[in-house]
Image (cartoon, rainbow, N blue to C red; front, top):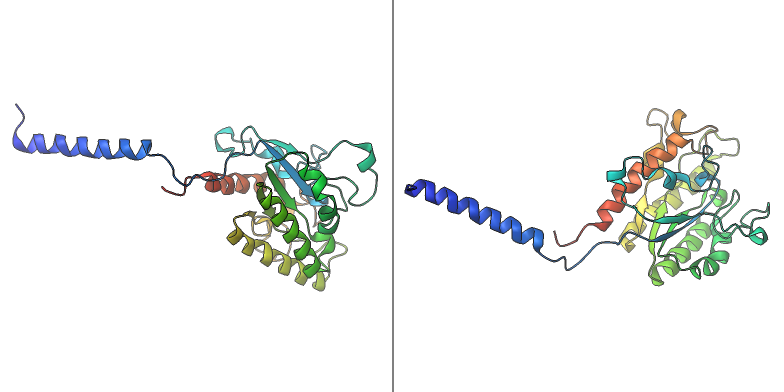
Length: 244
């Protein structure tokens, strides 16, 4: 027979296990963002992956550690393979191209939304950092329109690019203003991946870390891998139940 102290300990342990069992079985009343089935990548040359030669960028590396892939099963579309929209003209492809801007992307958006994606990655801004107000307005419309259609909106900040041939201080100011708006946009329910924070050389502010770039603007595969790690963390947090 158990003595009184032992019976109390057993009952206390049972109570704790029962409580944990109830918590794990409790339904989530406010579920997080679902894993997207189809993701449109709207980007410029910074989303280009020099290793794999695609505009998949960091999405190419989300499955480096499979158990940490918060996008498992998602399909990413960065080019439409339509010769009519893949000419060597800035912003000509509906999704991503070297010279793409928020203005081109806003013009092409309805055609992208018609495809039936349920999430969008917006990686734009560097090509029009000299016009931050116009860029912000266009990106805002892209994000709002996408969200209103039920898409999960993911926005990346502009990475550092001091040292690139066309960089100037006014462009840096524009970059910082655009990034400030992007970071603030998390309050609108968008998922923000702060590429500037992730890739900046902390010993050389305003510059990309040397192993993350090959020309001070565009990202190496290693740079995209670092962004992918952060993207998985952000998406996992967005997917979490808001009750727990």
